[in-house]
Image (tube, rainbow, N blue to C red; front, side):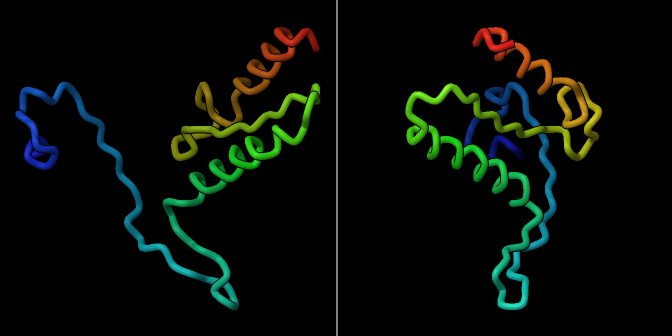
Length: 105
């Protein structure tokens, strides 16, 4: 069935992944419908906004020696204590490595 949906021969499919998501439709909410509420937008929009903000501000910083960091985690649904989850030491380790390379540690 998958091969028919994507228009290829069954033998051309080497592997596949199943991604399930909430199918609840998005809607406007708030006193004046000023907010968008969507189960599929929360992490995507906040991550996109964060990284877009940094990319747009960096050129204005000139020769700044600041190191800008934005962290986006996967595994939110299965737990923050995973190897690279929000409660792991991954970000601390990465920042330490960056500072060592930049000779700031």
